[in-house]
Image 1 (cartoon, helix red, strand yellow):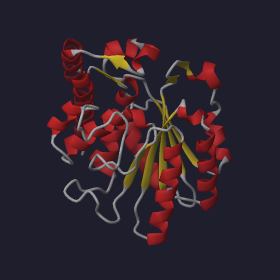
Image 2: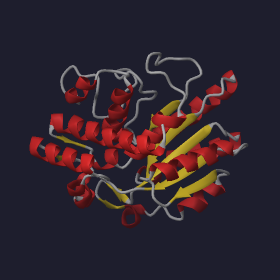
Image 3: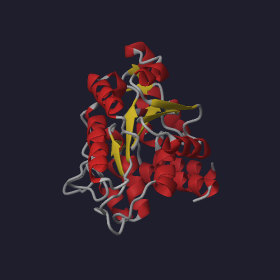
Length: 273
């Protein structure tokens, strides 16, 4: 996809996400919308995956460690054709294949169950090691949250990945500066984030506008060229990006109610952006 196509793809991911959460009436919309652009770039350009063969050997894998952003993952998977888009309207309802947090045993295309914050990066490290052992050339991707980065397990995984020189591991921090009940810097500041990751022997790339598909694409391309160490791409994002009333909700967008009227307003706004 070219950049215009990637921007349109990101818009559709946002629309799918809003409609998915709107079908339930409540959900983790802020942190889902903030990663729509990186998902568009990954699934639209960089990841070696095949929706017609979801268990394909040697495929790239994505672990959404901030598992509450599951609706965004479902949105992109449905758009890629892993399952019918109609399933998006069953989010977290009885008999659904789309629980509020990602579950690899329920959802086609989900590579790792997530939701207990901090654990996903360890899984991504293990996946990267497995790909190295198989010599299949696959890349392991992961998305972690900034609040999640307060978890000790994140740094245990970071230390081991650096030690193992896992250059087939690319991780994104969704640095939207907000967590469930406040600002990250006021609850447990994670800065200086760049220096922390570098100290664990990671290549660090910082993207000032983490919702810009062109900047994200260039960062991933650069990361792929670096050999001998894992790569961290820090995306400075906006929580709720693309829907003004979600952005304005601030901390309240972590999980918020969204009725049919708000869905319609959000979709109109996204399409017109």
